[in-house]
Image 1 (cartoon, rainbow, N blue to C red):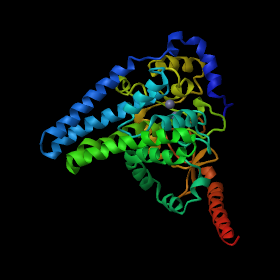
Image 2: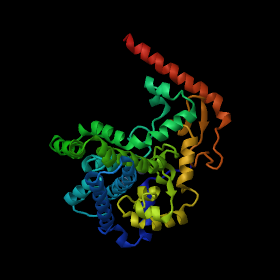
Image 3: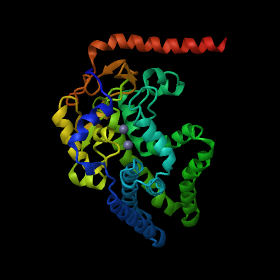
Image 4: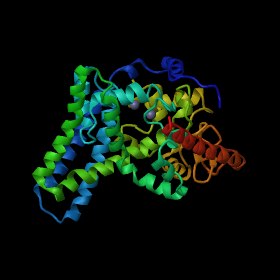
Length: 373
Ligand SMILES: [Zn+2]
Ligand SMILES: [Zn+2]
């Protein structure tokens, strides 16, 4: 792998080439949020007040789900402080934007801004990094799951994208709640619980059938949209000891209108270089990165990135990807993975299969030994 540099190193090199105004907040982004909010409320009222055949509601559910996801993208931007600067307003608007996904602003900033951005793709410290083989081997259930054939795992893994954000968010709440200062803990708790109280209140108010179309289906759709992006952000890249966004992040490309609808969320490498700059300026940052380090930068069409994700196994092993069911090893971006022709590195299979089997027996041995201690 090439020499790695921290995101600060890249940012310092590019900062002089960006206009000063790029570092100012951009409150006009809120007009987009207001539009999504109005469409969401309009759709919720349509289902809530009018009695149609429930199948007609599905189209409305799709629109609500798309709005939920887009509000999540805006919430991400707001909570990075690139829309408004005042802390209370930032947290209030962030809470509104993340309401459908039921993630509180304080939890999000700790999990995402202070942990994921600081320790991106670090095997131990990034809560969003896919686990390593060694970590997976510690769980009996995961050992069983990873013995299933790769296409079966890929299928279920893609289906689970419709739940992954909500499940991971709940997990982050459990993991980080105790790390907050006791005075803040109550606020973090209420920020997470209040959205759920409102959605459960809606269930009691409108009944289960309408609730499924007003909240449950939109939530699954929103999960699917945000996770389709998030799953391509880093999972084709290697894990890295140094937080180098050009090595550990991927920018996907989508049609311009999709970027408009999703607040340029596709520019993930640019975002990791300048999380404090509005995504409005990321096309400019991209141009600069490509001028300075064209051979280090990774970008891929969104659909091709998803296909590559389907065809490559997980977890990580020695910064590469391994298929525990076959012992096949695949490269990562910038590290031997050719996304036009995805195949395993055959020459590495034998050694790694042996290593893999040794890992399992070592883990089992340790477990047995600990029983008798
Ligand atoms: Zn990221
Ligand atoms: Zn971010």
